Image 1 (cartoon, rainbow over the protein chains, first blue to last red):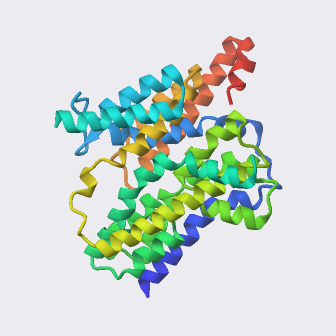
Image 2 (cartoon, chains in turn orange, brown; image 1 turned 90 degrees about the vertical axis):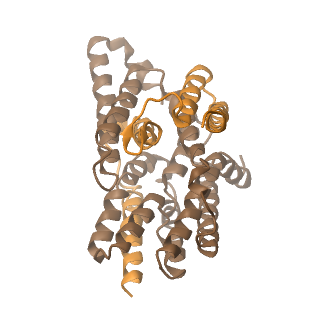
Length: 105
Length: 244
């Protein structure tokens, strides 16, 4: 019973966060400075999610070149900056990651 | 783009992240079972909550018998970043009916935001077809998340070493593919750099709080750099604003 309440509670807060702005979307118009700031959300949030995944190993900062997460990401980053084609970036990163994983470990 | 082709497009651009999400769903389902929970708990959670990282945190809290309010308020903090996505998407969904907005809000996860947002920015998606692509991405992730949870539940602990395969790297590569095209002007570089540095400095904070704060600092750094640039080089305003 408690578990059901927990799941329902999680549903309410999660959906609430996602819906609260959408519910009034036709009435609210965000101030210019907010719109301007929102341009940086994709870069800021996605970077904050993946950087620890790439550089932390066992909770320790690691710049070891044998870390496949770092190798794949450096390759993907370089190709991404150079060609700016997401699919090419993804394929490069994944190929280098698995090559590093199986050849180096 | 027709409705169907927009839906297919949304699902298609989500494929790398769907592959990256598969191990998480399997691990979530099997972890819940190995923790002694009944199958309906992970299944109902994936179906109703639909929030990967929050679900893992909740499993951990349930395992230590945390009270209801702790699990729910932790979920709130972990998912607070979705508010940023919703704010960014207001302009693309405000013309839609409330039922549409309910469905799209329910499906507003990191991956769908990441998959769809670049195509709104580039103009490939607009008010007429964008919500169908968004919906297609959501449905694809929803099917993956719930079916992998089910398989994980059925397999229990029978998927040895799955977390060692590294499938989840696909998500990292995809995010890099989305970030790099933005990095053409100084403000985006400083948002990137600041978010990266603070996500490492603050990674010990509980409940993804470090990630959320790092992201907010990143946004602030972008805004600040933009301001400074305009202050010293007013001609730059149009080019800098025009990238998005």
